[in-house]
Length: 240
Ligand SMILES: C[S@@+](CC[C@H](N)C(=O)[O-])C[C@H]1O[C@@H](n2cnc3c(N)ncnc32)[C@H](O)[C@@H]1O
Image 1 (tube, rainbow, N blue to C red):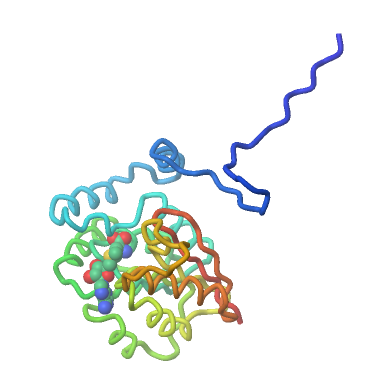
Image 2 (image 1 turned 120 degrees about the vertical axis):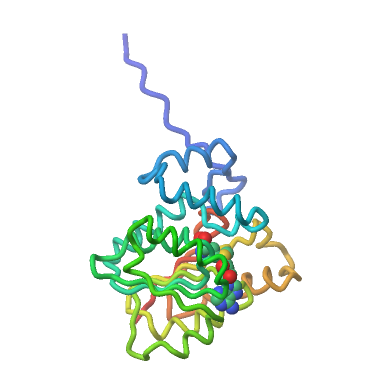
């Protein structure tokens, strides 16, 4: 009997045309699977922080980054050998713990935020996570904090997750402080899935994000890619 050759593998990608679009549409089942299959699942400190944030600030708890994004950020910060990092928009501290955990032994993270109330929760969890000794928090508008940064201070990693119309300003402020091959991540860059339509959004947040995505794609100072993690993460490698 001749042996049957196995059926060719047909990936279940969703593409209507053959123009190179390749993607798997996510649904709740797949999102749960993505969250399941990663390191640090069920981390006690991060889970307790999620619960406390939800209890204290139920109206804004969705501002926290997703769990898989947090693991991605820890891995990325670690792979860059990050000694100095900066975060713009700290809230109750979820992303900052993920960044701090990826730093080298003597690495440091600068956090910028305007809210004392929200960052008081962050301080508590930095201590529980054992990363409080690595983090310096500046309270006040991020653009003002940059004026106080020493011009020679250089970062391998930056995370921008504050007021959306301010993103471009923060980008221009942080860029001169970035090392070559350092990485800047911007959060919420798919803006709830509302981008990519014929007209740019009218909402100032959506239009600021849309303009910045398009600017980054053309900007010769960085290599930029828009990743569909969480609400969309634009990842920029800083060129020479
Ligand atoms: C989306 S939340 C950050 C979420 C955080 N990265 C996390 O994973 O939990 C945005 C934060 O930006 C802060 N923020 C808003 N405007 C700011 C400004 N002009 N300067 C500094 N922080 C600002 C807010 O206080 C808020 O905590």
